[in-house]
Each structure stands twice: as structure tokens, then as C-alpha cells.
Amino acid sequence: MIDWPPAANDQGTVSERAEGARLDPIEKAIRNAFEKGNAEDRAFREKVYRSAFAALDRVLQANPNITVEAAIGRRKAVQAKITEIESEFLPAVPDVTLPPEHVVPAGNGAPAPRVEAPAVSAAPSVDAPLPPSQSARSPSITIDGPVQPDASDQPRSRVLPRVPDIMPDDASLPDAPSLDDSPGAPVGNGAQVTPDRDERRIRGRRLPLTAIFVVATLLAAAGIGLYFAKQTGVFKTAAELDTGPPEPTPTLDSEDSSQPGDTGSPQKPGEADQSKNWINVFSPADPTHVSTPSDAAAEVMKDDTGQFLRIRSGASGSAIAFDVGQGVLEKLVGKHAMFDIVARSEEGKETQISVDCNFGDLGDCGRKRYAVGHERNEYLFDVQFPDKHPGAAGTIAINSDIDQKGKSVDIYEIRVSIAQ
Image (cartoon, rainbow, N blue to C red; front, top):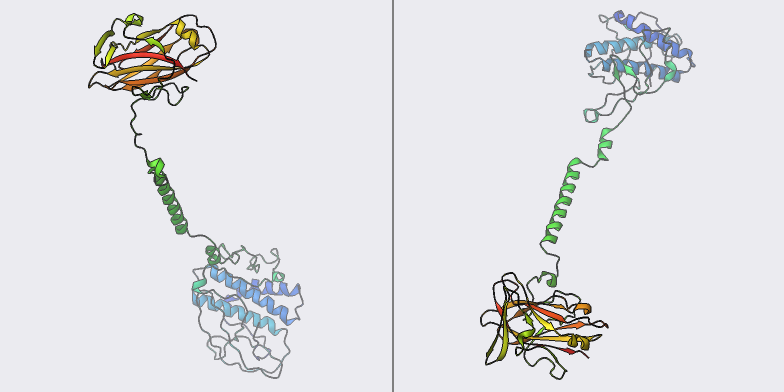
């Protein structure tokens, strides 16, 4: 709003006429704006004056080289020009002396000083400003224009009243300052007035970079901890943690997974079912049915435990073969047979033996392995024979030392029975 002091209707000259050249474009812009609306409407004129001051304020802010005194001088000159224009719309009254104006310098685009004079009953008029040497000073026109933001609110740009009707024709006023306050419009020496954006509100919605870094670090540490916990067995059960060797047994498991679980289990003398009808396959009394390779040895011996055949495999690991007669195989056709090898190792020389079978058309027994001690034991394995006629005799081959260290084994007997 404009505070109009009671002044005389005087068309005097404007003080500081040195600014007249600069005011001509402003005056033309104001008068052109009047032509685009109802100039008799006081509210419309006030809007035009506010827009004029806003344009001047933008120009002053865009020029950092201008001094405070020069800025105050320009604003006072514009006030004087507006007072002169406004006086044309007021009725003539006797001159009234105005009280002196109190001007407080304001730097960096501070609001224009405000001086209000007491109102009178008669219609007000406006005195033209006097030169600085005279005691009377020009009245101050208070404009509801833009206000310089506080230092704490620097990111906010200036918001000016939008009065597009006062925009003059560029062709008619080439030197007039622009009164357009649209966002981003260049003013002064190329500076732009940007839309109002409160960067503090924008920054408040963003997650701080430090928080993101801390969260990512914690997640990575948790993942690494879980990985090492899993590797070290923290989540394993007691059964999974028990990785010790199983309880030792007197034999080794059979290498043929197709055989029953008790295959190859040694039995002590007398543990085999003596009630079965055993068929003799080999006896030390008849060593003619034993085939010994050139680097192997087989010798019939006897002690207080009885007669036995001591066999010793050669350095090549060749086995000693025991014949299984064709007549014996014919009795086993289509049957489930149980073989029993009665053996022991030399005293103080425990060994591991392997057993392989070749029954011709009836197949084999797979490869068996046994740990043999010095005590006489029975080593059993079973075979399911197909229902077909054997074309020839078979063999059972025994390697006395699979480690090829020259250890021997005493064979007391090899026999077979038909399992029920």
C-alpha cells in the first residue's frame, strides 16, 4: 500500500534532477501500464507503483558495484517521480508544509524507509521534492514491495508481486527497465530471479550420506559374521560335529556295494552255523587245487592249531587262486550261497587281504577286503547265483597283503553252504 501524506498539489521540479535520464523509461513504463487499465482506480495505480519499485529493486540487487548512497538516491528519485505522477490524480488544495523525512540507510536491498504524515480533512496533495539545501524533504512513499530475506534464509529467492499489465512495449521503450517478474527472467547485468525454492525443505527429505554408509557397513559386517559362523560350525548339531573315526572293527567293508551289509564280517571259530550242510572247496590236505604265480608262494604247514596253507603274494601284488570245482557250482545254481574262509595272519604281522571270485558264466562275488589278525577267524561272504548251467569251474583268488609288504596269510579251509 502507499501512504499518501497531506501535501499541496504542486507540479514543482524533482530534486536530484541528475537522475531524470534514468527515470524517463520508468515514467513511460508506468504511464503505459496506466493505459492498459483503469488509471482512475487508486488500487490499480498502487499495484503499478509496487511493480515499478520491484523492478528497481531487482536492478539494484543485480549490480553489486552500486553503493548504498547511490541506491538510496535512485529510490528517492523514483519516489519523487511517482509522487509527481500521482499528483495528477489528486484535487488541488492549499499547500501544506510537510514534516522532514527521516531516512535510514539500508544496505543490500533493504525495504524503503517509511514516513507517514498526519492526515487532514481536506483532499491530499503531493509536494515536489526540494533540493538538499532546503529544509523541506520529499515525502516517503511506502510500497508493499519485496523485502530482502534474512541471512538465515539466504537460499530463498525473492518473490515479487506479479503485475504483468505494466509491461511496456519493447519497441516503444527500448531503454526501459523490464517490469516482468516472471521466474528466471534476467535482470540488471544478467542475474536471474529464480522461483522460490526452500533448499532446507528439500535437504530435509534426503537420507544423509553418513547414515547410508553406516547402514551399508553394518549389513556387510553382519553378512561376513554369518558366513564365518557357518564355516566354523556354529550352527551344526552335535552329530554333525562328531567327525571322529568310527569304532574299529576287525574287518574292512566290502568294496562291492551290491553285497549285503554283513558281507565280509569275520567270525570266530564256531560262530558259523555248523548245522548247515557245508561243501568243501579247499583243504590243506589237497593243495593241488591251488595256483601260485611265479613271484608268490604257498606252503602247507601245521602247528597246534591244525594244518593250514601259508600263502604269500608276490611284489607285483598277484593273488593265489583256489579252484572251485564245476560240480560245486552246479549245486549252487539259482541258489543263495554263503562262502566261509577260515584264516589268520602270521604272529605279530596283521595284514589286509583281498578276495576276488570268478565263477565263469555264473558271474563273480565282487572284490572283498578283510583285516586279518593272528587269531584264527572265519570270513564270510554270500553270492546270489543265477539259474543257469556253469560252463566250467571257477576260482577264488586271495591277495595276502594289499599293501605289497610281503606279509603272509594262513588258510585253514574254504567252504560254502546254501543259505535258507
